[in-house]
Amino acid sequence: MPPVIDTHCHASQYWFEPVEILLNEMERAGVDQAVLTQFFGVFDNSYLVEAVKRFPGRFAVIAIVDHTQSDATDRVVELHDQGVDGLRFNCGFRPPGDDPLALWRKCAELGVTASVMGTCEQYADPEFEAIIQEFPNLNVIMEHLAGVGAFWGPGRADTEIPMEAYQRALALSKYPNVYVKVPGLAEFCPRPMPFRQPIPFENVPPLIEMAVEAFGGERLMWGSDFPPSANREGYRNALRFPMELIDYPSTESRDMVFGGTAAKLWEFR
Image 1 (cartoon, rainbow, N blue to C red):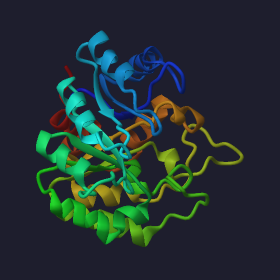
Image 2: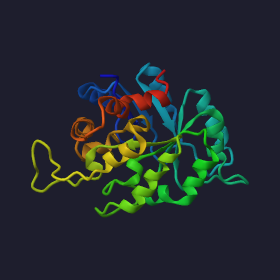
Image 3: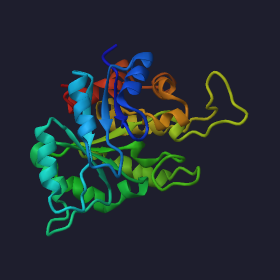
Image 4: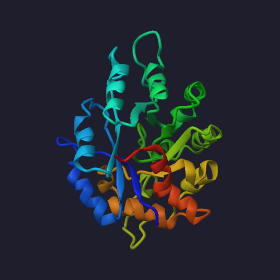
């Protein structure tokens, strides 16, 4: 099987876990490489950049800059010069100044991938589609299965999956620069009570299958959401369940989801 790549991992010395813990989990689960994804509220990306240097060939970085600062685009240039290939956005990010899409524009100019956090409804909003249309050469990733994580998606407090909004978000597949991160199943499947073994989920809604049908494996990528995944099914199961329980149209399609697509977008230096 080709290398397995995790496209959504958090690491820090002061919150979550240090990168060495992630490496241990990766070794145990058979994950070869990972994209260190900065978490919101942190604008110092030096720990992630340094991890790339400390562990050659293992990591890439999705950084965050403070979009409220007038020099935010300068920070993107600096990060790009340091080898950062991705910038993390929230759907509502708009920097001050005359150009509300300045950060998006700078990423498109530099070839920096935009990894976007949002609710399913925000992805489905025409305003988000307009941004995609504005920058056809900018690779844009919708995180957390386009926001349908019923229990862990941003701003969602109930178990109801917004299926209509999800379908509208999936319709963005008509733009070839749009991608989606595929999470562990526990992002949208409740933990059973009483617990079931060995497979805890009795009914898995076909959300990943819908994404595969819309985007194909070549525009989907797996992301564990380490280490919050430990509060759900755990790191290894966040990989194993969607890899083994979902019916992909071909082995090639599955391999793209779990590594091939990510290898196209990020350089693991």
